[in-house]
Image (cartoon, rainbow over all chains, first blue to last red):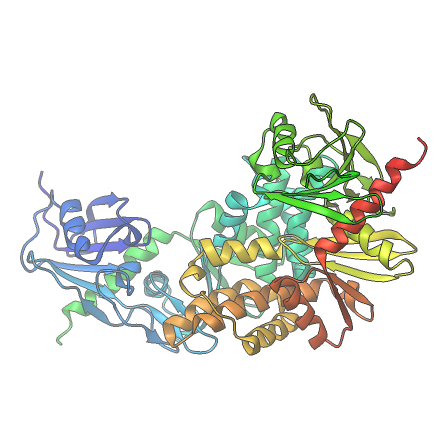
Length: 298
Length: 298
């Protein structure tokens, strides 16, 4: 059976591309994924990549396509300008240049002047979360390569802070002297201890990190412990810094990845009540909300 | 004129190899360097590498060769075991296995059980510093990929702490999203501000790092400022952690590199009196002190 979407939802990040064939009522008819993320494409290659991905679907000339993510960055298909906080998330759609008849609109990111900060993609997940939780007042945490802490009130993003914890974890575990120490497996107790250590003394982070390596040289340090400790020290230091965000707050974590589970565990150990939500669902709900905008009279 | 060293001093680190032809009175007769660091060599390749480097020198069968650095690690020529603190630096020499008639002894590193920590190579520089400053009581800072803070008293290393700040700087400036922000040039004022920011709030390090990138997206952030700020945030966070080492202490910095200058500037801004010393000279003085051990009756 050929799928004829009423509209198409697209999540186009740095390292991959996902598209959903959507019915008018928000039902997902089909989905397709590709490794052709923003980082792999030159500006002229976006339209062919998307066209190829959805080639099996029947796309009419008036089929709306709404995309979020790094596709809207300066290095993407079209630069979808930032909206500055305080603002509702996922406002403002920018038409991408096309030659083959597709109508593609890209959701703009959210920025903050001081302290300087940016997000692109997360604003759509936040919009999705708010579409499902209209009266939410609190903090949303979006774990990832660049984890975001977002203060939301009255349907708007009030302020946010990005920690490059995930990227640092990747670099240290793969490219630093710690690559000799880490490995498969994960010791939950070592993680909890490391979070606690870093929360109380975040200033010795770079020394505690080296000690992971040294512990294996002056004694035994199993890779399950080393890996968990690396993760716990970095997340613990982040929790020390983001304390003004989570302390005494309702925290919703968007994500069900292993990483999201670790944030959830660490916050719960601090006595913070946490709600975990599915990231893909939030992305789709946010894209739906943005698509609804395209139907409003201009 | 052919050089006939009385003995040979060798500094064999991870990424390079240096040898000095020494006279009996400690005069340097000649020197030679090679990019064949420990990391580039299999165990059986150390002897040929050294033999080739000093081929132009007349080496007698009783010419002593004394080496320090990663050549003595498990992945090196021979494992020269650690001495544990508290201890005098650069004690204990381990003979390397040779087939061609060279007599090579390798200086062992220094280790600490708790918190786990290790050094290899720095102990020789510390021994050199103490040979020149016999009554020194205070803290020695050795800036580098893995910066060491070393508490020295009564000729012994009492305790030490390693920060992997330099390695993190390299990874972030070359392999992270910050590579788009950094570049040539260095803004001294931005460095000082970043040190101060990180000293007062080390816990937001990973957020302040991301803000370097974000500042360039929501406005202008010249690479001279971005580079200096990256360096300043990392060194400032290290100074926050190592405060128990330097506060109210005599601090001697071993090193005259650009990095050593930055540590010196940052410490002086905190009102700490700093002495800067030449790292190569300290290495040679330490090797001389170790060579003197080989002449003692066994």
